[in-house]
Length: 67
Image 1 (cartoon, rainbow, N blue to C red):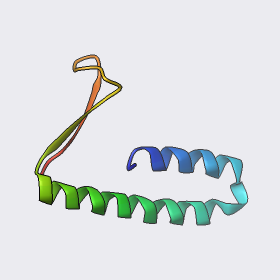
Image 2 (image 1 turned 120 degrees about the vertical axis):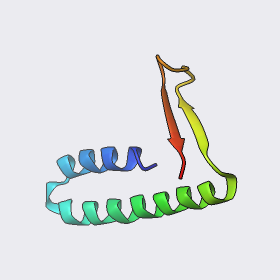
Image 3 (image 1 turned 135 degrees about the vertical axis):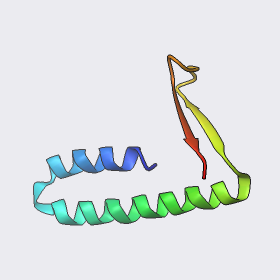
């Protein structure tokens, strides 16, 4: 979510240019909540690793959460 939300917000700001402030504010709040939830999972489960798209490095993208 912390990656998808800003990308989606950019598209929405382009489509609805009269509502840019509201879209940005909602995105900041949603991103803050997503990061807080991610930190909570980090504290409970420890460092995590997520391979995107099923490809292993060096071809794929790996997202890691750690302290």
